[in-house]
Image (cartoon, rainbow, N blue to C red; front, side, top):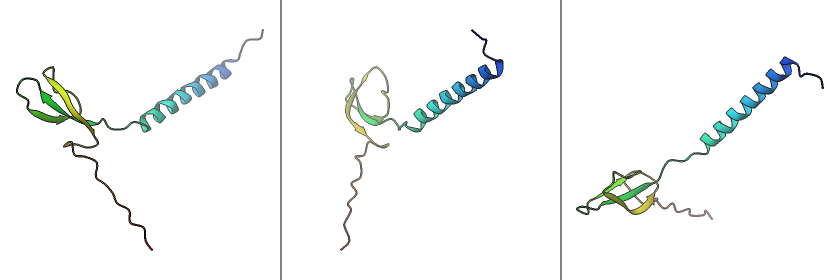
Length: 82
């Protein structure tokens, strides 16, 4: 078996690194923001809107919502032209 030249190994290593970088960039491009939820306090029933739990004494009350403030998604009506 003949040994592989060093230049071929470097080329393969670069190609592998480039493929890994492209895969990571694609995954980042597909990411979406985290949804928002209403959280209710187990102690006094107070509610707050957040993307993650405020702590141990909170449970998720409703959701998910698209934006801050836990507002429902705005409806867009398209009226066809005649």
